[in-house]
Structures are given as C-alpha cells and as structure tokens.
Length: 144
Image (cartoon, rainbow, N blue to C red; front, side):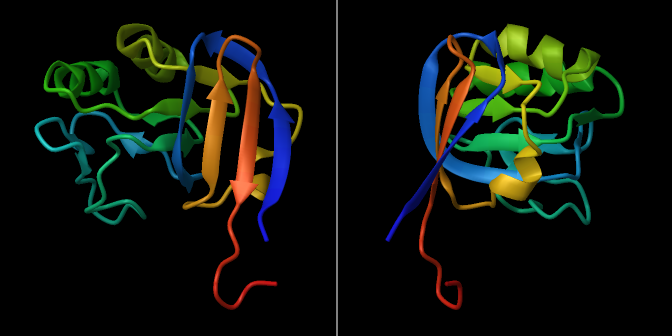
C-alpha cells in the first residue's frame, strides 16, 4: 500500500513535474560533480555517484563549491538532460542560479524537514506554483 504525504514550502520556480526522488543531505559539487553529457553524478564518494539525474526530482541540501553548478546544469540542459524538479530546504546562490537557468519547478523553505520525509525512490509530484510537494512512499521489501 502506498503512503502519501503532502509537504508545503515556497515555490521558487513555477511549473509542475514528477519523478523518482534522488534524496541526499550531501550537496553535489558543481565543477566536478556532474557530467553534463550524460547527467551522471561523477563526484567521488557521493551517494549518487554513477547515477543519472535525468528525469529525477533532486532533493539536496544545496550546492557545493563555486557557481559551476549553474554552468554544468545549463550545459546538460542544452543536451536535453535535466532533473524533473529540484527541492531544497534553503536556496543559496548556486541553487538559485541553476534554478533560474533550468526553468524547472523548484520548491524551498519547507515547513518540515524534507529529509525526514523523502527517501530516494519515493515518487514525487512537485507544484512549483503553489509550493506543494506530494510524496508517495512505495512499499519496499523489508519495510513495514
């Protein structure tokens, strides 16, 4: 049985999108964290290393490093590779510039701790206009 939770925040970039969550409190490095040709996370030791962000809802604590974040995400977008949406507890200069460039739905400033509610693999529906995130937790083997 699926468990559904609604999380409210502030819509930073409007629009609607959905996809599987890629959730980690570990930020991703800008210049050396994303391969813009494939959308793969290439940052050594990151929990998402070797995984593609394409079509996923990224749930991250923020960006890491310089504003290379927006450059690499923009280059990936030109090649047709983008996350479906992004969710951040708080925006910073890196995440805000990437959000503005990508134009995908972004929600931030949540009323609750997003990392206590979202796990990678949960199905996420994002309404960036209303600042509402719908989390569908899937039954997983070994979890009750």
